[in-house]
Length: 629
Image 1 (tube, rainbow, N blue to C red):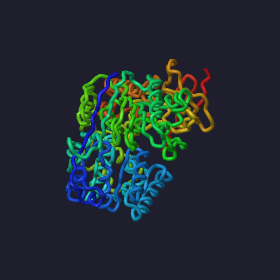
Image 2 (image 1 turned 120 degrees about the vertical axis):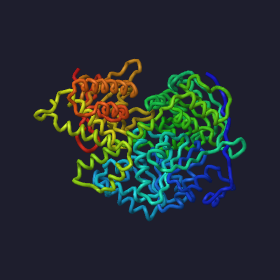
Image 3 (image 1 turned 180 degrees about the horizontal axis):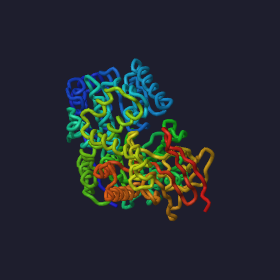
Image 4 (image 1 turned 180 degrees about the vertical axis):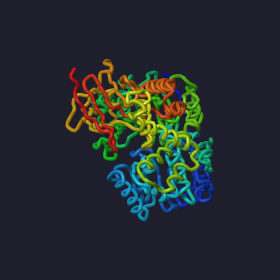
């Protein structure tokens, strides 16, 4: 364990301009003026705003809202979306929320509801808050019909907030969205805002989408408007919070003993896994009931638990996961966090503390590095980027992901409709560098699959047929923005009560055993004893002849699947019977995470077998049976 201090930080200020001058402040932060200048004077259709957490990015969004008929604000999580709506309501801005629960129906019916929603709110509201998944659904034809994409016509101005949050697969979708908005509008204003932006993403907009980008960056100064307070950092040797849970619980008890009121959250624990978050919450309920009384939990497991609503709760301690890296708007004075390993995520997580008051941060799993001495906040951020390995997203990979998304969007439409609006082709194919490459690849795979089982074609059991089938199954990763998952209703212990939520089965079974299957295939689970290793296997559609271990971390499962698929491509290439480019097959699986793309046909545990039906147009469904062992 070592301790050091990260001192506060200040930003340059100026006299406020445009709408900022209409407020009650005698100064604006310099970067805020640069944003409003771009809104009123800028010729570049895109601006990339880099400003640290708590610096006041959201205040600049109001300028777009005031100057445009209707502005679209895009947030990565529904929790953040709802929080921002409350902020706008408080500020007197008419804000409407558009998410998956807002719209009814499926396919064409959902499309009509989407466009009816836009027509309803365009005259009554100033801003629509949504997530990028809905925008991508119109592009990939999940909302059926050519006119679904007309939703983009309703907006000249759009803000992608916290756009660092997205992985490469999702980033490819956001880039295609940006292209469509910029080309469909006569005077587009697209603002990309983040504390830790993906510079490869920004460079792609500039060089491959060929859109001018106006760069705006917050300027640190020694004497200016202080936006961060001093933070005392303690680095712990343990990798996980649960490895030191008694000490952490005692720390929480001491925090409660030092204050008189518990109605405002000031202590946050941020775990790397929902399982550890759940276990710690349960541990507090059993061993530290006085601490538990003032703690609430909100992680991925709780997202779809209808009984979890932090807006209706009074608490002092928040237990969360990466879900809390964006959007926590509390005066956090004590933060206990695990190292998320990616520098951008670390800075986001760390930045939740010290925004209003001086704070203490306890970090688990950070290890040795360039940190350890007393430094200022900008220096510490640089040390984090030097000491942690970032995930580089190459321009080539982004080009392939954007190109495949466009090609798949066109291929789906050509398969479903006899013809479609040529504007769709302009949206998804024109000036998309790798469109042709991947459009030909999709056609080749589908043409070869049509010959499977026919006279002179591949036998259904042949390596070629299995590889083609598996590849086509992986195309489904591009149906939505963030890939695919196999979700089910899960009943799980959460300390004070049993929670019921919707969560990914594969992830659940790595840490929980199925105790009982309730009516409607609701899985009642219980935590597995860590001394008893999990045994979960999956059979995947396509080329596999042996089940894949599915109880390992996602990164290890992915590595196993990638090794298998590239080995299989090499084997099929040696047979020299497949009329699909082996080079493109290898490249496709280089840019696509198989665990994001494929849904197992079966999942088997020591006690149960889960059969998956993925043949319909909707989400996969499951049937669960106890094994006769």
